[in-house]
Image (cartoon, rainbow, N blue to C red; front, side):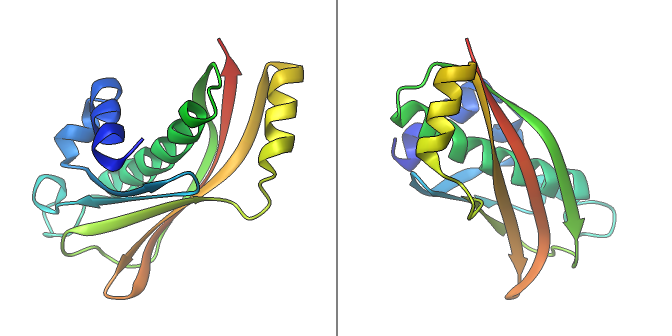
Length: 147
């Protein structure tokens, strides 16, 4: 899918994404980038609310995985198994989130496990930078369950 197709898919299935103002800007099979405005996501300190940045990281990671699942014609439901989010710096303006599969991903092994066990898991990391410095890092484990 291209960015606009995946964005529509995301909005149709996860309505909060549209409320956050998420825009998908780059999409390929191994990477997704999103751009999100500060205005609907800021807190009383005029910085991005931690829940919004966490949600953005999850949405970007989910979009990456969903795009790959669709591209590979896999029939399954994605769920997040576990996550860790670390906050390093306040976000004070519109922000970009980048998601990529973890370096240890072996897609063929993932597909073999999915086909044999009807489920498989993998890791995805999403990062938000502010002024060239890491502001938020999300590390998640996602599972694909055969439907």
